[in-house]
Picture (cartoon, helix red, strand yellow):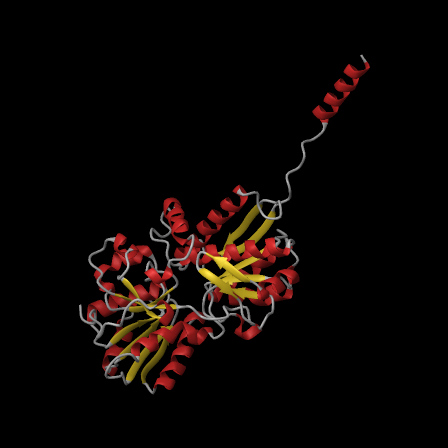
Length: 410
């Protein structure tokens, strides 16, 4: 009877006791370009982050805790980013910060530094050149000299011509990324002994590029260098198609051509264009896990990017770095995480990542590619080798430059 009473009491206690609370989530906060001019990248970033979070939570989370993504739309307006990150840190009390994009990251950096958080950034050019913040880390493979690295391959390809080019015309948006890229291009041009015959920025909201293409044509340059954002890239190529443009080589860091939808839209008009990339399906880029991730991404994407080669692999690698750092440190201590990040070689679907003194890759690995043999608008062809031929760096090279620019007259 006494045993029965004890069992009944235990059952009563169990019935009225609240269930054990799940572990508090590890909150990861970021601003994202879900609408506006950079939404193509922002939507890919968000989907990739969600794929990573789902995979990690399916394995039991980090440090025995689920991960939770907290994000806000900055509408592609860098002026909103300081306020968003202030809310994430002061109101939402996030544990970890991710940043993305040159203009957006640069705008947020002063307040992130003030909060003394570890910043893991991606798709940003030379953001820490000004601040030298020791808790900043960037997964875009620019290396320690980003302004030079984004254009190194362009000039290496150009100077492989015989005879060597003599003149160059350059243009780009009056915004952080383009200005940084053009600063590096000017130095490369000087080092190569090239004469700059045109060098002008255009307003970030410019839509009609007819006058710029006319002005460049008037200088009759050997090389045409463009540092542009997606909307600008489309406008410039439209103007080139309408007016024609003769040059030995045409291209530069033109953002937009990396996206599957734009590749499909442009089709064979891409042939001959030299651009930068982060990942292409060439045999020298066969990193463990990248194909499995891309298949997963393509199965889930709905209007973000049907190919998923540009933003998603690098963003996923960024979260892999974060995962390995938190696991390796065993805590969320910002200083310990920063120290670990500086000392560790990370294994990711984009290959090994090792950070240098200022938090950039210790060695650069920006790809310079040329579109060759594109036929029609079939997107599947971009999954095959030989279409986006790697010209630089030498360790990943899969082909040689073809010139002059075959799409110079349409």
